[in-house]
Image: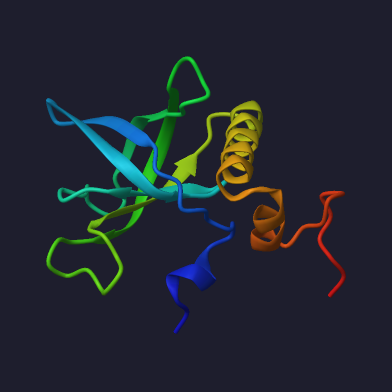
Length: 137
């Protein structure tokens, strides 16, 4: 059986960003626990159901306006059922509206990861050297 980390297509970095979204007629403001180019984990005591697609705003400190993104809930960790070291919340896969949006989000996430971790740790995390290519196997 594969772990969640093994199922991921992209390396994740522990970055906390404010996330705003609406559920029914109520607005929520939660925080990410980590983020990658393909998705994020939102810490919340009231996760949406698996399979739910929703629009949320990702508040990035270096940007003037939040980024509006569509996401799909892939998995949830309910309060009281979380394993040691895990927070209750929901794993979100980004759904891109266009290749341009994908590129913008991937570049923004990469910059956040480098700013948070430093280039050396970032390159080790994603398995890339300074030229941007993967090291030989």
